[in-house]
Image 1 (cartoon, rainbow, N blue to C red):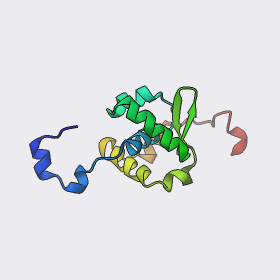
Image 2 (tube, rainbow, N blue to C red; image 1 turned 90 degrees about the vertical axis):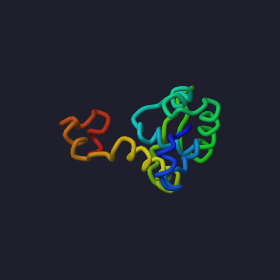
Image 3 (cartoon, rainbow, N blue to C red; image 1 turned 60 degrees about the horizontal axis):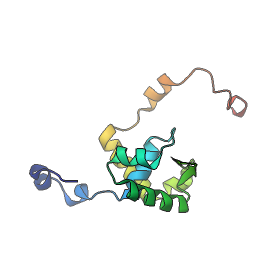
Length: 123
């Protein structure tokens, strides 16, 4: 992906350092942790070749960072495992920079008043 000359001249090396494809894939899946996607959909969303995304997904699965069922992929729900992966932190920072950090108050305002039937007995 190219950048304009002004960005090149006025941005630090650290800021210009791109995330690896696995970091981008994991960051995308973590930002959309309530959904599962096909590799082709992930590739389209992050602007990376589908073959590179498929390879990254396989490597992430080997590390138990993503789950795979049929043709769908989702981020693991093992938060300790995710937090131990440095790419997760970098991916989260990237999406926070692009989309803004999550607003817990806004999430609570949108939350349903009653718990979902699948978790009623757990509270």
